[in-house]
Length: 244
Image (tube, rainbow, N blue to C red):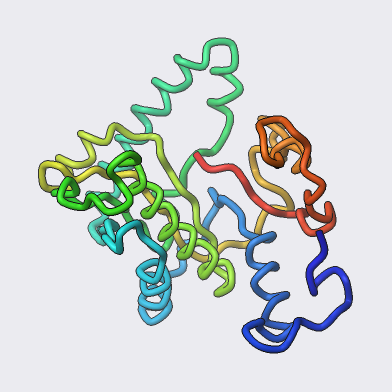
């Protein structure tokens, strides 16, 4: 499959962005990284507001807008977050068995280093939202993930790194932050300036796993029936699939 960024054609008139705008969107997607190494420089408040606005513009099932963001400004609270993550890091290493030692060598968060730390949670009282969730109640979580991805791509376009940390006990984090019963934290986001972005996803660079071939992941009409529309491999370079 070709698009205007690879075929040399200008986009069709009408609803398409200009060619430079299209290329900028794909560039943000392909160069996004799940960052773990940060500089201590603060994030400009206006920039942070833009990023949160981008997150809030994400699609959500039934327009429920289930995302809630808690900005962690207190240093002592950051330390408690770090302790929660460290506790789960050790438990994860134990659960990984023979790969535990390899896992422990990975840097899995930047809570102490990043200019900003945000906790993203599902809101409470989600049961009242039935539209689009009657058979797929997990679509509230999918909606929150869309908001996180919006923020991630906007951050990359602004030259900021972001890392998604999911190593924590949700109940412990909910209690720590006073999230109401029924709310469910799903991500600790480390956000800030970086010295450099990784050339490839960190887990790929560290040999933890490799990217699957797109042709093996796209089917036509039935499961495992190959689809001829599998993309130009050149457009996949740098696209990050990992998060921890």
